[in-house]
Length: 177
Image (tube, rainbow, N blue to C red; front, side, top):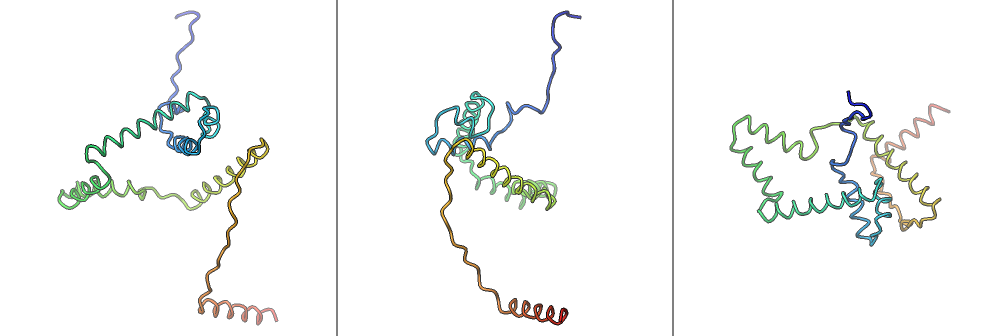
């Protein structure tokens, strides 16, 4: 055994060093489009730990852009891909047709069904997080743009619905009188 040397520890699945961070990339794009170029500010906006992570995310973004440009210059577009699926589904064997349809279903996100509670939980958590972030920004003295006032126009209630509501009111009066 080697004395004085530390053991090597492999951590799997915890690091986002090589992983996709499209959310952070999109936040960086948005900030850059609004004229924010300070790496420290970009780090805060994207929620990244280090400035190096900002540069790494921008590199990933540049590679993504080059990849899409390369696909387009070689004639590969979304239309091309969909036409390929269509051709496979129309002219392939049953196994190929099924695989093509499964791929299409996955591409539009219909392969996974979440419980309604889970999906509701995620948007509710998003709203709570957003309000907490805004509160922090207010405490730190940042200016938050207030959305413009808007007017809600309620649609007219259909006649049959009005009749049903009136019948329910009448039934309620009869029950409690």
